[in-house]
Image (cartoon, helix red, strand yellow):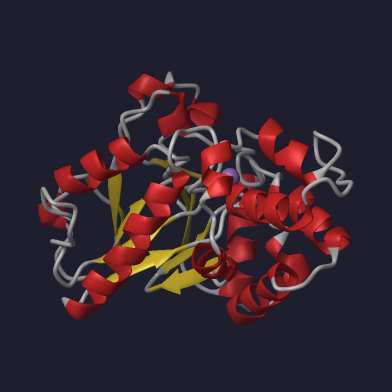
Length: 271
Ligand SMILES: [Mn+2]
C-alpha cells in the first residue's frame, strides 16, 4: 500500500510526486498496476486547483480498478468545509468567519474551486469514507479521536458522517467541522502511545496513518526539509502530511505490515 498526504490544491506537485513514484505516466494515466494508493483527504483550499486534484483522483480510481489496483480517498475537513460553503453559504456558523462561506474562505478557500464544484464532484466528496482499514493499517485524515463520537466501528463512523453530509442540518455540519479541527491527539510523548493503542483497539489495525497536521508541526522541521513520513507514538502512528502548501516537496510513503517504509516505488510490491 502507498499513501500520499494532504494535497490542498497543489495539483502540479501532486502529479510530479505520483509520476516520480511510477504511479502515473507522463500523460497522467495510472501506471501503478496492482498497487493500492490512498489519498489522505484535504484536496481543497490553500492551493490553486483542488478541482483538478479530485478530477485526477476520480479518473485514477477507474483506471486503477481496471488494472487490478485500487485508489482510495479519505474525507478531510477541508473537503467538508467547501461542501458546507456551497450548501449553507451565508448561514451562520461557529467557524472562524461567522458564516459557512466566510469560514471556508478564512481557511484558504479558493473561489474557482467553489465555482466548479458541480453536483457530480460534490456527490463524490459526500460519499468519501472518513476512515478505512487496509491490512495492518488504520487510516483516517485527522490525528484526532473525535471519530468515536460518530461510531464505534469504521462502518458506523463512515455511515454517521456520510449521513450528516447528505442532510441539511447546519448544526450537525458545524459540530463536525469543529471536531475535525482537532489535531495532535497522539503527540504527547508519554500518553501518545497508549492513546493510539486505544484508538486501534477500538477500530482495528496495528498502526495508524493520518494526514491533517503538517509533519513540521510535529517534529519541528522546516517544510522544505520534510521529505519522508513522520513515525511517532512508539511507532504506532505515522503522519504523512508533507505540508505541500507550506513549501514541502512532497513524497509517497510505502506502508507494509512491517511499518512505514522507504519512498521508492520498487519497494511497493506485494500490496
Ligand atoms: Mn485537515
